[in-house]
Length: 151
Image (cartoon, rainbow, N blue to C red; front, top):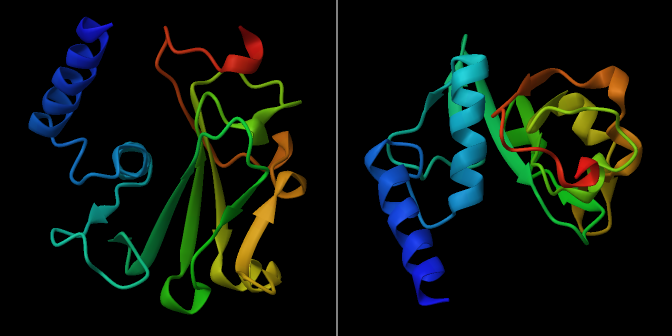
């Protein structure tokens, strides 16, 4: 078991050296990296920009990553602080259930005005109803990483 733990920390170090992981929020960093590649976003160097993660074509982008096998919604931040939010569903995300998508990661794109419609008592969030096959914006595939609902 100790080899597995060591392997995890070695993998984290490798991902940090490659510039994929930039903080202690590993999954969020992987989501940001995927969106940087797909949307040509210039990620914030400081990682401390209020309400957004990067800029592309003059627009502020917020990136959210969901990979939970139990949670059925995702918090979307404050739409007044960004122009576009990109939601990355990872291979283990429960929000993928029922989707016929074999790609490792799928990305949904919402404008801040669309997110305003998702307001609830605890902020802005959305659930399964917003994640349909016909509104997937982009896909990112790692061939040997298959979504868990297809395994």
